[in-house]
Image (cartoon, rainbow, N blue to C red; front, side):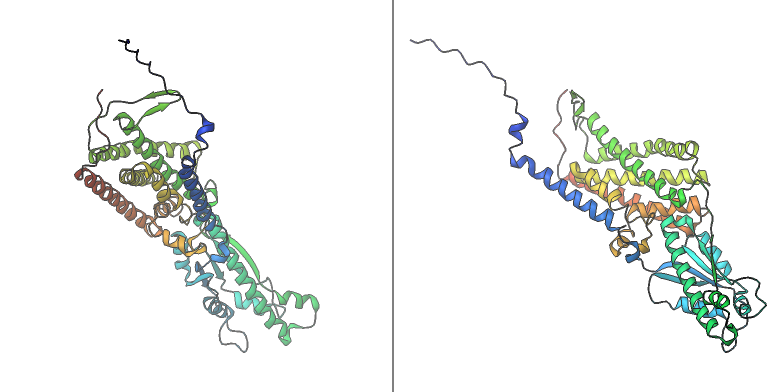
Length: 428
């Protein structure tokens, strides 16, 4: 009888080579489609909000103040200030949302960030224009354009340009009347002056500090708060999953896997949310130390700024944890779109919402960065006034926190009731 043959020794599996794996179409499919889609969406969303602010400009709030006390010119029923104001307010181009204001309303509008600038007609405007046609002229008539840099350099610049163009057009219109008057005389130099008689000056209507980034520090500080909440929540999410044995820990060539701790999805979410609230104390403090103590950014109401910054970061962090709990592995991608990709172009901080397409104005109704940015801007530039955006920001923080808690806990409790556990516990 033949002897039994010895069993063949086990052979180690042959490691796959990259050149062989690269020839697998299925390996390429998902990363290629997702990367291409992300690149396309990012390009459309980011560039779509800034590529044509002039073309998208609609109803930019600008004030006009008429303090002209002069008597109407001969043959006219109203002085030049009243005529100019009526013509401006009746403008149908739709680019500017002109608002007729008193001096007190003007200062309130600038101090609360409700208008991007203003055009002011002085008390002696009609009188100084009339004096140009006789020997009583001592100075050229003046119209004053006021800016509001606290609403951002681009928004203030757009308002200033519109107001200057309006004032220049008014000067040319008045010039046509003056040169057509018999009192204009025949002197060519005088007629050249009368053809464009008004001087347009520009002044800052509501000053901000020199270390305010031309009004952009509010946007970048808001971005810091959102990123601190977003990145901190994701770090906590990954760290907790690793510590509880639900994810591998790989650092360089070292790989470990901790024993799985039996815990429900709901309890895991509560743990992550609690840690997020705790860690935000540190991140908020460090953000303020870096921006205020080290970089010396202009800011006031520091206790309020810290409390607001903390609540804003916590609201973002809780939202990220809820999204991650609901969507699992793709949660970080989803939360990135919700809090950053869609939030940046619809924030209204760099490009005014009046100068972006309607789609971004729709997003601004609920996108977190828009809500948080309004509160930061109110604290930094507008004396923490509630009507400058701070009241709305607090309300939206409260709503966002409540939605994050309700959504996250509702999803995890649903998964738990259905028995959709994350992993089968593994022994130590």
